[in-house]
Amino acid sequence: MILKAQNLYKSYPKPNEVTLLKDISLEVAQGITVAISGPSGVGKSTLLNIFGTLELASKGSLEIAGQKIDHANLASIRNHHIGFIFQSYHLLEEYTALDNVLMPARIAKKNTSKNSPAFQRALMLLEKVGMAHRTHFLTKLLSGGEKQRIAIARALCNDPSLILADEPTGNLDEANAQSIHTLLINCAKEFHKSLIIVTHNQELSTLCDERFVLKNGTLQKVH
Image 1 (tube, rainbow, N blue to C red):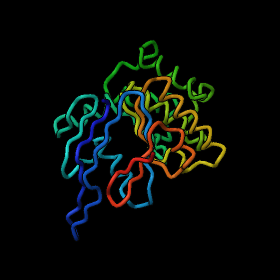
Image 2 (cartoon, helix red, strand yellow):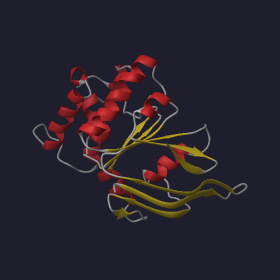
Image 3 (cartoon, rainbow, N blue to C red):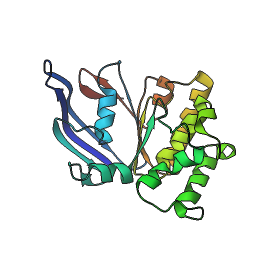
C-alpha cells in the first residue's frame, strides 16, 4: 500500500471545538487513482493536507510508502514520496518552466546540472506534458492550462510514490480542464503512480479507479 490511513480524526479546539474529520480510513495501492468529492467546507483540502503531511491528524495513524508518519520524518517523506498539484499552481512566476520542474530536486539537494539525471528527467517530463516548447519561458508568461501542465511535471520530478491534486482544474475553462484531466490520469497510469484528487468536477471523478464522497466528516465509497 502506498497510503494507509487508519481512524483519522481532525479537530479544532478554538474558539469552540469542531471535529471536521471523523474516523477516516483509506488504503490506496500503487498505481490506483482515487477521487474525493463533496460540498465546499467539509474538509476535503484538510484531508488531502493530512495525507500530504502538511497537517497532522488529531488522532489516528498514517503510513506513506510503508513508513508511519511522525514529527521526525514529515519533511523527508513529503520530499521523497509525495508530489503536489494545486488549484492555484503555486509556481515561481519569475523562474522558467524548467526551473519550476527542477525545484523539488533542488530542495532534495540532488545534482541538477545540465547532464544530471534530474535535469534529463525534467526535460523528459516537460516533453511528456506537452511543454517542451516552453522550457525556458518565464512562468508568468504562460496561460493557466500551461501552468498546470508545468505543475504536473513538477509533481513527478522526484519520482514520488503518491501524487496529491487539490482541485487541479478549478481555475481552468472547460476545454483546458478536459485536456488536463486526460493528462493527469494518463501520467499517473504511465508512471504507475498512486493519485488522490480532491475535485468538484464529476467528469474528472469518473475517470478515477475509486470514488469517495466526504460528507459529515466521514468518507463514503461511491459504488
